[in-house]
Length: 113
Length: 116
Image (cartoon, rainbow over all chains, first blue to last red; front, top):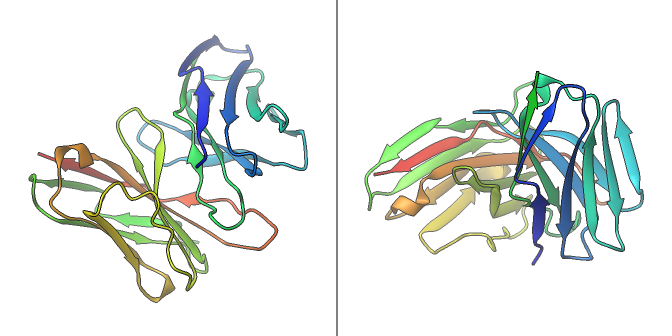
């Protein structure tokens, strides 16, 4: 089955700096890659996703890149703010058939004011 | 509209007891998922329901775990003879399902299960 690895496990940045979180996946049939943000004690919420037919997607300060050949995808947050502090999870899915997500182990991002 | 709801929010039980966790998906969502999140860990897939199709149970960790979804809506996750390693937050999610478009999974608030 699918295996998703996520790095780093913790990341501390200064407010205004950029943050990058990287994930690799093993199943070449995976074609849907969402990113979830989970604040302490709250439910995971989708912040951005990318399909396999595009290499990059951007939404304001957040961008995701996908390299299908290398089977890795990354989350980029620019101009970080204290409210960006949370745990971020990457995930992968085949999209059809078994649509359940395989999650990475999470990255705890701390943005220092 | 209402999001995914789960009950109870917290459950403390003794080792060996059975527990039932409930999930109410968003109305109209045909897909329902159960995940488990252990302390400081990622989300682990447990089971997936889609319409009237047979559920995908490939993530259930043992035969002590089972789930059902009645009437294509509410789902119950049952853990029999609970063990301390079952302690975790159990998250339910639901989504629309379309053949080509991949749809966001919306998560419930979770049930925190503690097995003493």
